[in-house]
Length: 635
Image 1 (tube, rainbow, N blue to C red):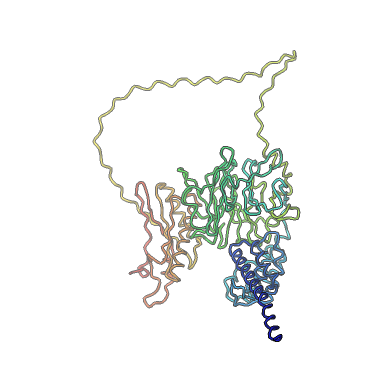
Image 2 (cartoon, rainbow, N blue to C red; image 1 turned 30 degrees about the horizontal axis):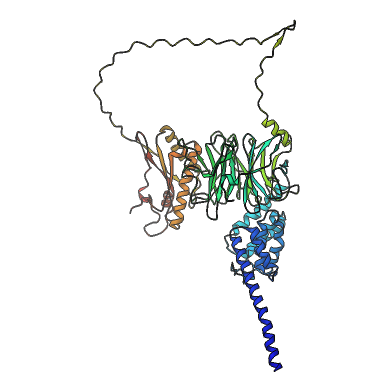
């Protein structure tokens, strides 16, 4: 009997232990699912907390968990150095057959080499970063990320060169009245220098703070988040020159739009979307900057027909109060990668912005372009190290025509996480003295003081001469007798005047303008200046080589860059429209009768044509030159 009871007793004791193991497995799976959700939402601080629970409960050697933790730390300001050790551990078990979002996954993907390269780069271990990027290239084969790896290697080499010759700048922390233990970022200053708005990272939400400059320092900030009725989803973007209007972005997981709030009757109003249908779209509008007069907006969007991902656009306020049709700033500023956080200086002559492209030293860098008298932007100029770093550098706010710039930095002399700093040339006077000089009111014109005669008598200053009033106008002449109306004469209609304009032609798979193409568009510019009432539609075309969907986008880009050129020359954007036609309306053959390629014919199909859509007098008609008979396209 005893021999039977002992095994039963052992089984009964094991049941609670098995149940406990199952509960732990369920808890760990929940941690994993929560971590993956936060990871997908880019909430890396929340994600790393859950991943670390797995790491500390049996998954310390799991390459995938180490890989995820490494990426999280790589995206948490102030903790990016922690990412290296986790990514190195992940690389102990790498496989091209990687299954995402599975707790059973024990390997890391080849991409871990890319992220390790990024981790080394942002921590200024540039030789190791280049080595990691090259290792990725060896393993990745024909991956689309090869180009990204090459770009990062170039960025590392640029960083080495820039850091050898740093710009002489002084960085001044704005102090504990503005900065605290939590992150403070996205600071903008009104043109009069007396109002500052910025973001503050509170425990449960992101708040909008406002501070005022008074008696040589910034006041304790006011949390205006309840006033603008934000749920922690609105972010400071820019501020009007007089400090009474804030531009914000309102973001969720799927969309970002531009909003405004006004300071009225001692408080900030509920934020509302900017006026009109041309700015906010179903795409992502991430940032807006406003000119001093409030009539020009520079903003970023990933709307279609751009030159890359996020592009910078310009819109002009129309007389009825709506924002006009945006114009892409073009390839001199925008790149195939991302541009963001543009700011225009008070004199409208300099644009500062962040870009992942151009001559870059890693991540986003700050660039500037100058606007010349003819309305052309200069090439993008990197503002160099130490303003730019090997990490992402965004939201660089130029104040007083960039005499001082404000940015959020993590530095050893900081108060905690991200602090707001003022950046100036070393040779300039101190920040406090500079601000006092700028804010000092203009001197009133001196009035002559009371004059003391030798006798001691006080007399008033000499009287100013009085200008006599103008003489009354002469009486009107006697009224002329009104003649009898002459018989009406029907005006004779003028025959339309034909102007032959050659199309703009493009190389295969290109949308950049050639020198010849620019000369042709200058003829269009001259026509529109001579006849200010006409509106022109620019029609982009492609040849028949390549996928039809791709050629449609390519034709739209050709029309858009032609429009941009004309706007830069001085034509109002409202007089122009750009349309992509794609593989339609061929004027020449793409292939010979025997089916072989005809490059001469295809060249004539890769074009932008012009069409007058509106005119007060309708006396102009654009005519295209004829196509050689042997190349003519016939249905």
